[in-house]
Image 1: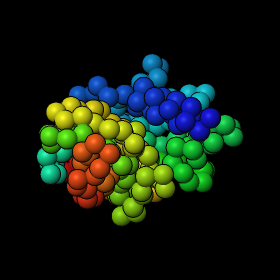
Image 2: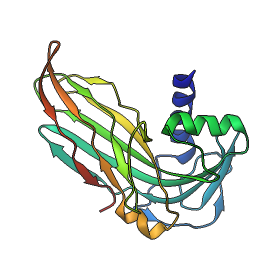
Image 3: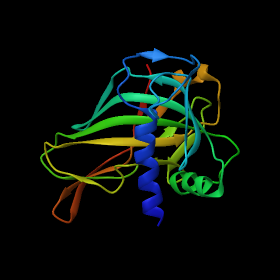
Amino acid sequence: MKKTLLGSFILLTLVLSGCGDNHTHTHESSKSSESHVLTKAGDKTYDKSQGNIQLLSVSNKSVSKNIDDVDYNISSVKLLKTEATNKNQESRYETTFGDKWESSMKYIQVKYTLTNNTDHPIFIWGAGGIDGSGTQYDNNDGAHDSLQGKTLQPGAKMEGLLLYKATSLDKKNFDKEKMITGLVDIKSGDRDIKTIEHATIDLTK
């Protein structure tokens, strides 16, 4: 049941927040979304599974980082605000973020691609984030990474979606968002031959 709620939350987040806008870095410009796809800062919508949703800030600046032959390519970072209107919606958020529902939930959505340039399969542990106020959220403790638990073959790439809480609505702090990469185990059969440690990526600079 938890996996079903979590999967539907992430899928809806992708659809509702949109991924195809051409704005490099915009802030709030009041506009109501009729198509349920939020592409511009200030767009709002309502979804029966998530409640009221507003896109507060968005950056489509490309950010890349190589860590021991594993490439992280960030393509989109969004600050979203949600307000649940019933207990089922609150339950979805609590399942996703592993944290108690608050009256108004703010979270960061990071769309990224992970590429395995090593000669071995890699096992991916969940990433986390640091919000604009400096608060850190780890996977399953205020954050969720869709690539958690995945195995990526040599030379392959995979798209991921990282969600983590944002405690501040001050959009000036949006420029301070950071991703904490998850541990990556380089495998040889059932044996780990190396573990790539955590690293921090500035998301909007």
